[in-house]
Amino acid sequence: MALPIFHPVDDPGPDFAGLLRRAGRPVLPNPASELSVPHATTVVALRFAEGVVMAGDRRATEGYSIAHRAMDKVFPADRWSAVAIAGAAGPAVEMVRLFQVQLEHYEKVEGLSLSLEGKANQLAQMVREHLPMAFQGLAVVPLFAGFDVRRGVGRIFTYDITGGHYEEADFQATGSGGRDARNTIKLGFREGLTRTEAIELAIEALFEAADEDAGTGGPDLVRGIYPLVAAVDADGFAPVGEEEVADRFLSLIERRRAQRGRDRGRGEPQ
Amino acid sequence: MSIPFYVAPEQAMRDRAEFAQKNIARGRPLIATTYEHGVLIVAENHSKTLHKISEIYDRIAFGGVGRYNEYEQLRVAGVRHADTKGFAFSREDVDARSLANLYAQYLNNVFTHEIKPLEVEILVAELGGDGGPDQLYHVDYQGTITDEEHFLVLGGDAETVSERFSESHQVGWDLGTALNAAVRALAAEEHTVGVENLEVAVLSRQNGRRTFRRIDDRDLAELLAPTPGTPASEPGPPDTGPGDPS
Image (cartoon, rainbow over the protein chains, first blue to last red):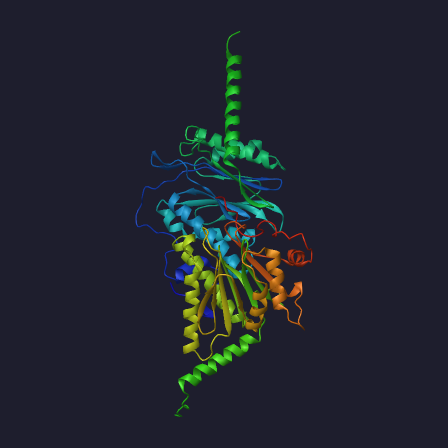
């Protein structure tokens, strides 16, 4: 590999994807025909008083079979933001990898971090460039959330396959189970949730989505695989420990079971 | 058409070298040394925004002395090289040796082919992984590359500073001691170096994935404060760089 030195007039600046193109490397893959690839998901993001919580299930499906049981769909984008993916797994993971390097690349070349808005726009450009592949059935729909260091608040951005991006006021969920997750959050959301309450609500939303959607995996008690949950606040990105997530799922299941028991008791003839 | 005067190649090379040396010698020196938890880099820099020391990759730092715009171009090229390589292969495959070699090739090319050699000297520092030694590479204006395991001084007056520094140098010293020794070595009899004129950064094994960290003036003043008996602690947890979930 040669030392990438450019003339000032055609310097790619801190644009990492532009640099890759200049080096003649493919930025994101571009298949020729429709393929069967792993996809389907539920990922959620919601605001709490000091930041945002993001969570995603672990299942990837290929047609009617399960391709992966322990896929990661929630990633740190940089220290202050997280990105979650729904859609075709391969291109989605590759897009996240490019996005992560782009944010770090910008920070190193320019000596400053991008603003949260700037990061959201950057991701939108990547989704837009991916549009031809979305037409071939390989759509990637990310969810982006982070802590805006300049404003001191958590913010959430959603995307459509054309690269359109919209800021959400409080919460959002995407993927095949997104609707069920969104409804669950809608019922439980209020302004000024604590971190713990937000994590609890995200977990409940994923549980409900897995209950209704075949493409979304619930907690796998046999193998000990639980959805990924992470929080971003003033201290930066922090994954919620696997044990804490497991405990919360188990107590949620316990509550549901007890509820069901009570309902049955009430329904029986006296 | 006029015929240019004949200049013997030896003379031409000597002139170029002299030109580069003279201009580099005017700048302030930079010291890099290994310490207990990694590599410490200290430079005298009167600017707060035009850095001499920067991050290249997870375990690699860059230091430049001489003409700012020239080493800045090399720094950006280094970040690009490292990020492209890490993206194409894996983060572990990015190493300082190959980058230092590329710098050496480029500097040598410019030295022999261009009208003017680059008036810079470059440091490429790498934090050793898995118990491997830390590496300090020094590339000069004509592409001569040397490596050191313990300390390196580049820039103006490097020999005298290096002599002063080697007197107090110890292998595996702590951050405070190393920093104080480096600042003492940078200062001469009639020349004092204040906190506001220092640029200091470390590659520390305690910093997670991205090991590079600048030490700000407040921490610096604390580390340099003469408090015998209580060794100053390492500056707090990472304050930039992405969280590493693994």
